[in-house]
Image 1 (tube, rainbow, N blue to C red):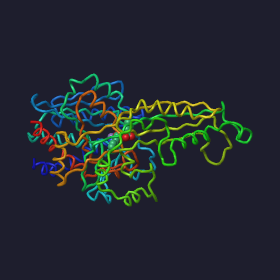
Image 2: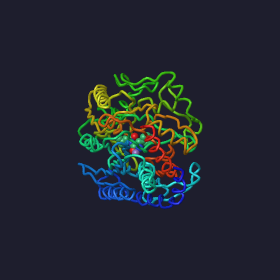
Image 3: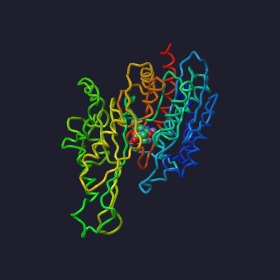
Length: 462
Ligand code: BES
Ligand code: MN
Ligand code: MN
């Protein structure tokens, strides 16, 4: 497949421009104001898959946003790769922190991306990474080098919990039958340090509400005599971690997978500079659970974080008031064996338990999902490893990520196949943040590496 490089060289500008067109559509799944744009993006993906050589492409309706499905079955006796990705994006807020408009993509050079990076919401997560697969497919079909069967399943609700995809998967097990699932929706260690993601964290997301008096009160007339919901909420939240930053919810750690000394030593071999990490985030020190390194804290350990908190007066000047209510959104990242529904239940019981008299508590579960780990001795992992070896000249490092793609564990449960996470983003690509970007180098390297995965996977399956 060495003509892939010349193919990329010849088509580079078109590959970039096609992605830019896709990035211009604001497919924000969380905000219903963008409904038509989300639907328009699904149409665009359908057209793209058809042009890339799929024999059959369809838009599958769900109770939410549709799933774009495409396939090319060349020989039923050959293996089948199922590619998953998502065409929805996170809201771009806060807009004023973007240096260029989130849906008007621009290419700019950065220190880590001397060849330029595409700046736009979704550039890396996940339109850019998903579209690498479409272009890799185009290369394989147009040069007659597709070695096996391919199925594409691109959804529009990943950023809001994939609940309709879960139903779709359960109802379409035969249609989605495959030998391996391939996803590019994660990252790699550095431009010259390729890695394959071998684990994802699970997630439990809840919203809490603390209610005190039935109305907002004068803080002079009532202050000190009634429970202040904001004081109480912050106190309750603070108590969820102890002095070692362990989570205090009873039973929270019961099922946590403990890694062996050997596994931890292996993890510690991955290149990492604490200084560079601190510098990139402009922090004087890191912070976290006692007894674990930064890389362990953000991958193999469970966490609890407040994502948003509100209540009371936040306008200009001062208003002396005790608010009637205070609220917070809290996420818990989970590790293998922790069950997200059980953890949600444990959280709810504990939070209700620790509330003092004088307030009422509501805990509203949002979405969640299980964590995932994949072995490195599978054919899929080996094929991916060989592919990176060819294109980067180095064996990729297996690495567990802190992020979540909850649908992956459901894939394994329902479709009985392993997922290979070939991510080409960098942590510094600012996914979900202002100024999200994706390196042109990374985009093209992905397109170059993916066809080799197909080739090695097919060879190793024989
Ligand atoms: N692609 C990300 C997940 C990710 C990013 C995993 C980088 C590993 C490395 C995905 O789109 C995402 O944002 N997932 C959400 C969870 C979802 C239920 C909203 C997350 O991790 O917060
Ligand atoms: Mn994603
Ligand atoms: Mn995301």
